Image (cartoon, rainbow, N blue to C red; front, side, top):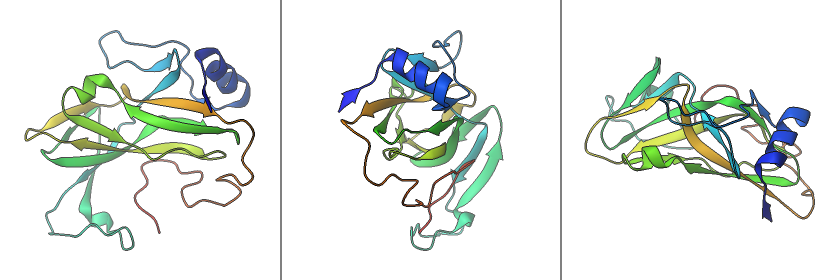
Length: 184
């Protein structure tokens, strides 16, 4: 597998809609940077948040997920409680080619504040907005900003297309829009 450079990401996005909307250059004036970088793309955080709460003393069960474990908020930022997490989504919609695997890594600005971004690999053939889990590992409340960079996506091109893509399998998160919670 080879990590793909900026010109390939640009071409795939402008000609094949791999990332929409696509930001041609990194934007960073007074904000957490986003847009095309040398070997990746820094996606933006959408202004919708599902903040984890344990008011009802619930148990997180991926086989029986309860939406009541989250409080929904919209806005220009989100305060993540100490030792907790929030779900959100990217502004960008991704359409991954069948010979590409995408990995996500957190932005250093947030990592240096104790915030960890977690996303599973984005498989060949998958498309939609990417749901992000942002963990606050600190004992203090932490702030994240909508419409600014939240994570970098790295594109790895395989030697050939896979035999069966995420789309072929009709994966349960295919085509998701907005923040999507756990499904079985």
